[in-house]
Structure formats: C-alpha cells, structure tokens
Amino acid sequence: MDAERRRRALAELHGHAGRQHGVVLSRQIRRSGLSSEVIHRLVKDGWLIAVRTGAYTVGGPATDWQRVVAAGLLAGPDVVVSHATAATVHRFPALVPSPSIELTAAGGRHPELAGVTVHRVRDLPVDDFTGYRGLTVTRPARTLVDLGGRLVPRLLARVVDEGLVAGLWTEAELRASASRAGGRTRPWLDRVLEGSGPGGEGRAESALEQRAQRALSCLGPFETQWQV
Image (cartoon, rainbow, N blue to C red; front, side, top):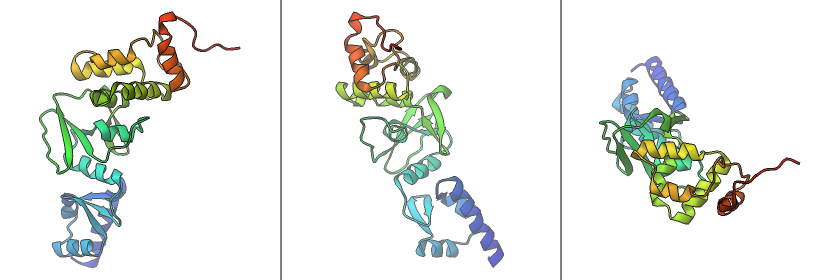
C-alpha cells in the first residue's frame, strides 16, 4: 500500500471513530484496505486498542461508555441498550450504576457477545426506545418496567417517585410501557402507584412531597400546589 492510500485509509478509520465515540470495528478496518501488517503495527504502537473481539478504540483505553458502544455496534441494528445499562444512560435516581452490559434483541436476532447479557423479546414497539449518542436505548419508562422486578419494594417506590419528580416518566407512560411489555399492567407497578391519586402525575416538587401526597391520598382529592 502506497503512502497516499494508507493516508486515506487512516482518515476513513478516523471518520468511523469520530461517529462512533472513538470505536472502530474489525470489519471497518478490513474494508479500509489496510494490510494485516499495518494493522498489527497500529495495535503494537497503541493506535488501536482492543475493546473486545471485533472492536477497537482509537488512541486510548476504552471508557465504560465505549464498551457499551462496542457491544451495541457488534450486536447489530435490531438490538437496543436496555435494563441496567439503559438505567445508567438515563441516570436513574437512587440506583448504583451497573458495570455489566445489557442489551435487548427484538425479532429473530440472537447475538452472542462475551460478557454481555442479551434479553430477547418478540417485539419492541417504537414507543419504547429512543436514540442516544448514536445508539438505540430503551426509553426511561420501558427501562424501569424491565428493571422493576429486580428492585426491592422500598427502592422501587423511591425510584418511581424521584423519576416522576425529575420528569423521567409519568404514571401514564409507566402503565403504557408495562402494558406493551407484558400485555397488562404489572402487579408491582399497581402496588407502587396505588394511592397516587388522579391527576397527580409528578405534580410534587420533590420525592418527599410525592411520598407525602401518596400517603395522604385517602384524604383527597386535594390541591398539591396553591398560588398565593
């Protein structure tokens, strides 16, 4: 490969990396036309650093987000970031970020990636996912529905309340996502939302106010905000 072709190939890889948060895939490197000898030298010199089989970072060790990007790109277009990984992306309140990577595959795809948990569903409605920094991620409401069964009741109630206050979801969005995910509203969601009262979707200004509103709902209906 002459110097000009090599320069163009490296520029192409830089372009991929720029669009993919510093991550390039092995198949993209091969398509660039670089010889095995040149690729080996780039790895040896630290220009390319392996993230996992089939993916590299350009110019530095992988961050947690780049590991998610690499897994998402390798998994393919019909796979979305979900569960605990999506909760970290959306910065769920009161939850410790999980180091594991979780994806959801819709339809007939069954990707297998080392160290990655892939959940399989028959269908993932368009209302349940969104774009985030070049990847597809389950929306906050669907993410909570997917995670709900893992959380102890007290923590789940806190996450629901603080998410309502922060505007991550409304009660209607949670119920709709639960219905799409399981065909009916899930029992844990009914228990957590019980007593929130009609029209009380996040009108409190803090999680403490939200819990107070829920605790006093048997005395309602009442005004939660009063303009003086």
